[in-house]
Image (cartoon, rainbow, N blue to C red; front, side, top):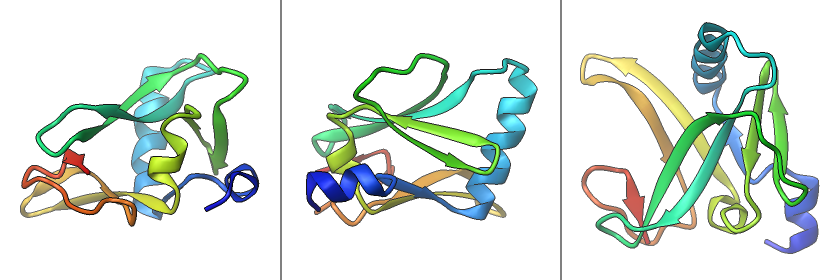
Length: 116
């Protein structure tokens, strides 16, 4: 994906379920400017790990996308690692949680929290 493509489309998509859950969690926080920050950091058992947290800070080089009531912020260094990825949320018999389906990951660990 080229830099121009990254600028015109969000680096990550959110499933309907993920939007609903993140919106619910943000509403519970009760802070007006909070958004979801998704980042990729060096570390984890496969080389990189995902990091997600609520953040109200926005840098000029952040990639920002809005999905209904949810604002997602991704730093410039993380954006290429997340290009084409989808953040999902499921609540089933095996437990509830977020997962990232990332076409850039060549391999991932068993816990699903890190990739290379």
